[in-house]
Image (cartoon, rainbow, N blue to C red; front, side):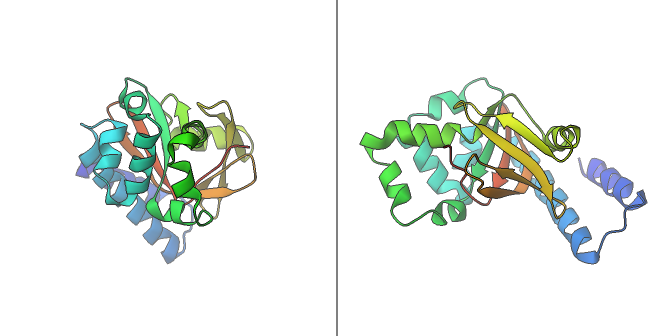
Length: 190
């Protein structure tokens, strides 16, 4: 695996794209995260990977409260845009607590399944869709809504139907039943 990363970094440095030192550092960090994520996640399903992450405890609690553990542990494949604890903390005060209440289970399910796409879409696939769409790709979610993927400042962002954006901070965390892309904000359906 290490040789694959070295080869990939060699390809990047051989391109004619001139990157600022800051962007090169971000690229190296991203590839490091991809390498670490793939080493630890390959033998786990999406839920098991999220449970093992200290940065996704709120997401795990929400998945459990919404009774989606069985679904997201299933065969898939799924692509999950997984908000971090910090992403949930950006929501207005009381939102998470309200969503976790039993009487709001359907609303919580709608929010969580809005972060899930049927099928496995790697970062390369998502970027390919963005290029095909001349800078934007509308992707249907499991809950029936859609997310719009785009590139901004060299990073992939997804936008919800309300115009809110989330940055993909780690990509291609491969699992036995799909792939996780970590995002820095919660996206919400209409």
